Image 1: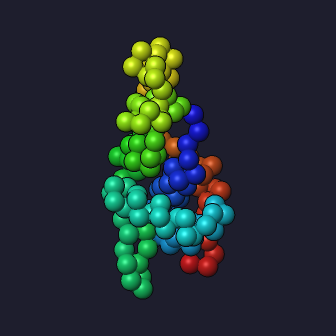
Image 2: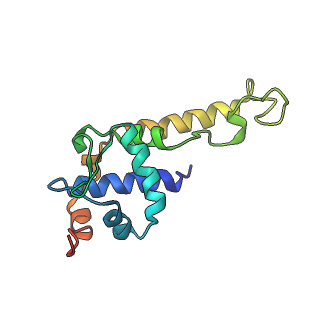
Length: 149
């Protein structure tokens, strides 16, 4: 399984905000820290804000911060919210009315069940960790407060 860049950047953003809980952070700051597009990050922040993972404060002195404590942000919840399609392969989707997507064996295929079980295991592992669990001193060292804030 490969997570989308959207989910990757969402998790990285949350880590950054989880390190800098003492202040508001800007989208530009997060984008520069990871070398990612600000435009792309705006969409991600919006989606994270809708779910309550991030709080956005508008205005001259505005910025971003975690919407709740890092210890209450479950990584599996973030993945489920940011991944549009958790199907590992196309056959995990049922056939559409025109018979164009999915697989004719979908309801009887044992491979589909194995893949579903594997995906369930992946999500179970992600559900067993919070944002606080993945923020270590290494992250704090590598993502220091920028000099220009």
